[in-house]
Image (spheres, rainbow, N blue to C red):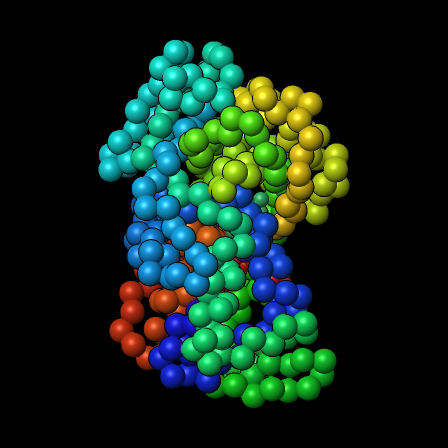
Length: 333
Ligand SMILES: Cc1cc2nc3c(=O)[nH]c(=O)nc-3n(C[C@H](O)[C@H](O)[C@H](O)COP(=O)(O)OP(=O)(O)OC[C@H]3O[C@@H](n4cnc5c(N)ncnc54)[C@H](O)[C@@H]3O)c2cc1C
């Protein structure tokens, strides 16, 4: 958003308390994929366009690698998106398509899934913002300052920094009750025969619905030779070591080559999970000049660019369509 605003001529300061991509935007599984929620499809498709044009070290795979929703028992067809050409596969046909998978599984294949390194999008957009003249102020926490129901700037270590408008975009730490952390752990491997598809355990596609999921569900995304195997869904910050063992024990049911394989690293981060599973975008009701861009849950990389564009356009006074299902106006500030 800092990039879009600065490119339009606004004077922008982005406050980041730790480092660019310090949160989930630097430690996610690394896939841009269809969100399987009709209310979010437009944001996804628009985001693809921004990613295609982004450059600055970011390369969106031209074609999707395909998503396999895998299960040990046949699972129902995922939500109705015929454009994703859902195809049911099992037995020899499934093994031929994805040899890394265990025997005896069944899957739905959907024509989506573009793997990218986890911090690639955040870093490229930060560079674009910097090039457009935005100031990236890293290393101090900022808090919106509101006076007489108007945002007047931010407070940093007790001192007031004035601004014409403030956007809350602090991921799971965004200070609204509607958003809370949903922690995840992902383990990195260099597999000898890495899966070509994005793999997800059937049922994980309910992520966008805001429903509670089991604490561990299998996923594997391979970008540039590194497979990110996950994942977990806990409200409390986990003991990552203990949870990693559980994630791997679950994952070997699907990818037997993981058994006994030494991981190369681990990513631990929190999804900004909203109460209804959809992001909160745009001006908050009741406080002038205070906007929000957060609550993207499991799909912040996938939806982030178009979300940012819309909030930026609203702040710039341009005509913009923020549908009620994702509008910040649906919560009380
Ligand atoms: C395990 C896991 C796997 C995921 N995989 C995918 C995936 O494959 N594809 C996908 O699309 N999405 C994925 N996601 C979701 C995605 O990563 C998030 O939705 C997205 O990164 C959230 O971005 P954000 O900018 O809102 O929050 P964050 O990336 O968390 O950024 C928030 C930033 O705000 C900073 N901050 C907090 N408070 C303050 C303050 N007071 N002042 C200044 N700075 C502050 C933090 O330091 C942090 O850097 C995954 C999430 C997890 C947890």
